[in-house]
Amino acid sequence: MEIIGVIVAGIIIGLLGKFVAPGNKDNIPIWLTILCGIGGVIIGWFVYTAFGGNGSPGVDWVRWIVAIAISAVLVVIASTVTGRNTSARG
Image 1: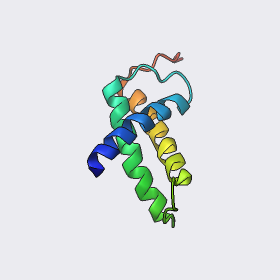
Image 2 (image 1 turned 90 degrees about the horizontal axis):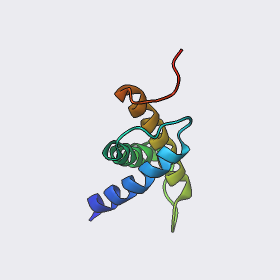
Image 3 (image 1 turned 45 degrees about the horizontal axis):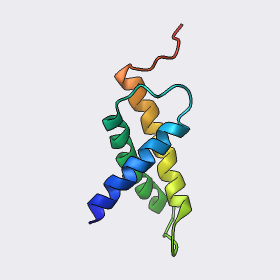
């Protein structure tokens, strides 16, 4: 059941990460956005616990903010690596 939760959270976090990513990062495929979201959730939780986060009762907003930030970074990296970024290069 936890895997399904991570996938659902990854879809939502991936889309949020795409939304917060700076610039025009809308040209990566949706499946790659979802993978970035899932990676952001997993890496974000590891980073959160590595820096002393131990969770809180209810929704742990700091953990989710870290996951969104890492997903945004992954979306930027994916856009750069796939070369589908439409920003002007000069």
